[in-house]
Image 1: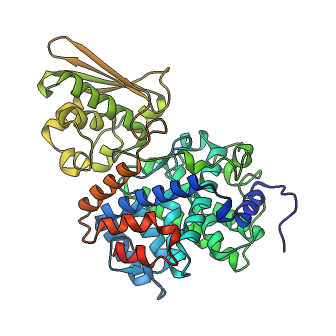
Image 2: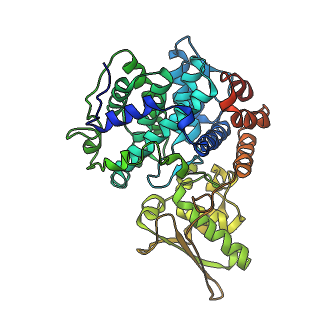
Image 3: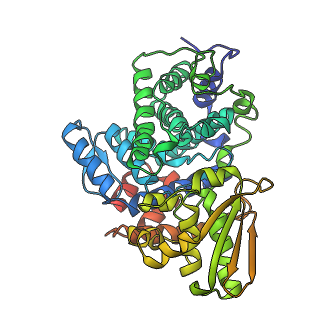
Length: 449
């Protein structure tokens, strides 16, 4: 059955767009941003290739895996495509160091790239086909996020997981060569598999929902390829996904400029391994330390002020390294103490470091109603009576101050060292930059193993 000539439903519009898209109509700038996104994702996954959450998930999935297996990033073991998509998605998201679409606060690549890479490896797809599928998946994921933002995330839904499943389904449908109608059925099936809650962000359950987004999106497309169907208004209907999750969808945000204005061009990359809304806090603290040569013993109090989202996500007690990655108090403490906020500063050892614990206790979080989203002001009161203040509107890594290709490469090298990657990271980086020219995934897979 062919798709309707004039789509009546949101899913139909997306299905037609995905099925009709060709590589040559996607702008070169979007091609390049796709490679930057993949490179950043690969680095994040390499950094945790042997971390406990990966090991635990592997112990569950290895005995259950089918025989047709594909690569796991940075490991010798292999799993079937569904299992590999799950594990690699966890890896890309585990350190909170992944990319961010700022309007929705979606981390686009972790749920989508693993499905495209696993299916592409299994089907011997070209690098260009996989990259094209990933770009389309990220577009769909972020546009669906646009139609329910900001209420969806504010209501407690982990938007990377809940919208990531649609991106994974879209990318997989493209690689499977599904037509427009089968593609929107895949998206509708994905709607029934969308889950993830904000309450679980400081726990391993968060990673399960991101892994499921990749796996379930791929599963949805495979089911659609076999003839499974879904309601045409599964996303925006009266009893559809968006409204069931508490939102009246702004459907025009998902279709206006489709194929012309690309959401991936709004993607950003983190310079610090923590929640994106903490980055302005870090930059402000680093500036105060640099400009005033602050010694820890000279600090009497630290006050961090910002919008409600900053407080909602970051005003929390710290009991482990996951808490630390989404803690205003920890970000301020390590930045002021060490003049850095890298992988070491968010390690479990730093959570219990006495100097860090002491400075966290001196840090207060305050609401500032006139603060834009993503901005922060840090005020330090010193023991000799001075008041020092720094406001950061646009932190490093934001759309206004983006990371360069060289900075992303440096980040990936640092992550490879952190994960004790035994291969050549230079070969991995080269394979990503050349990915659209390769006949299969083989050069990348060889470099990653």
